[in-house]
Length: 418
Image (cartoon, rainbow, N blue to C red; front, side):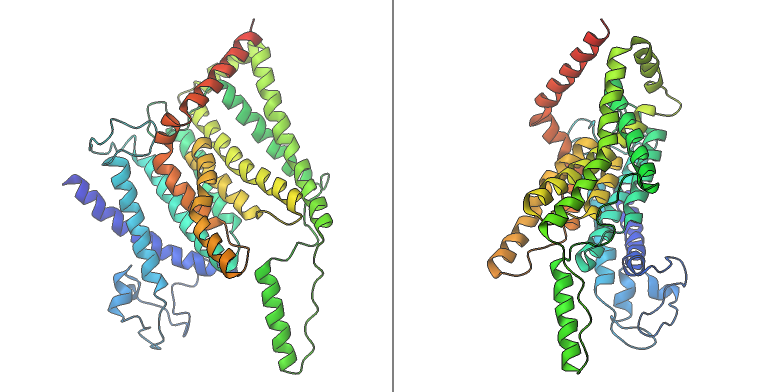
């Protein structure tokens, strides 16, 4: 009975979140305020009453048309609201009834009442992440962009919540051992250093003056040129496209940006393993209980790993093929994902994403349609998969390898202290 009450509440909450997502998806890419003006009809601009804004049911009560101008309202609005509510319910059932996800899990397939103190903070940020991914996917699918504000807000929320609530016994916590925490601290220090150097223009920004055109951008330019000719106007000037050599030269600048985080991450681990007095102080700091330093750095590690795995793929693919392999929006997306779900699930999400996109890719290949596709939706689906199944995958498939790496790190640390 208690599960039923939670399910009803979460569907209503998710539907309300979905209603807000509709606002975000429309306004954020257009640089409009998310709070002002209040909800209004996009056709006649008449403010909507509370009755018109009832999630899911409001669209049906209006018959799919604006109450004032009688213009049709897109079916996407109730669909997004319903899907968001359904996601909240589905993950509640998976986490607390089927006992999937939220590592370390309790005994499988044993329903239990959620512990408000232990479970809800992590569950809340996981639902926040899924809502963010849904909104970002809708924007990316339509406009081929992922607003950086959404991903960095997710990263900030993940770091703060994990710092406040993570303990070793909390399901879904990102607590990490001291050597990994040292690596995360070094990587974060290096990232801050790179951002400062970039701000001061000591290291260059890639694609600062010109960026390669995507296929949908070329198609839009051709359509605009054809329309101009049909109207007897001079077609607008076409910006020059970049050569493969120019693209490779630009992406090499990104390698320079990544060097400080990678080098400082290694340096911090070496210092930790080779200086006993520093190791003792660091171990004591990581074990602090007032604020979970280990959870904070676990979220930082997740963000760094999530972003890095996509960024390295982008760099290697671009150098190999002479065209942008992945967008920086995907890097920012997985940066936010890693800060909430951790390093392991973000890596699994990255490798699971192609399986969700392969059917679309095969269709595009067979039909000869546009070769480029927004990758954000597939990274989001991969993340949704990893949030549920990472524990099982890590325990059964890669658990032995992870334990081996852990033993190797422990051996290195013990040798450094002798």
